[in-house]
Length: 50
Image (cartoon, rainbow, N blue to C red; front, side, top):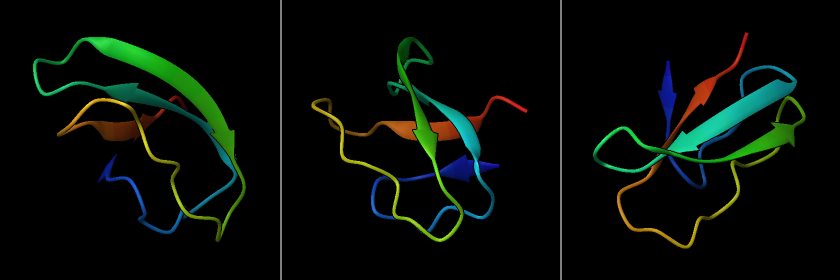
């Protein structure tokens, strides 16, 4: 499941941010219901590490 910056997190866990080319940018831990954090790179998306 792809999530964008500002989306509500569906479940607590680790999420990896990828740039538009699929290169890993960073990994963050987000709690259920929190918003996905912003990134410094445009067009990034998050995917669950679970």
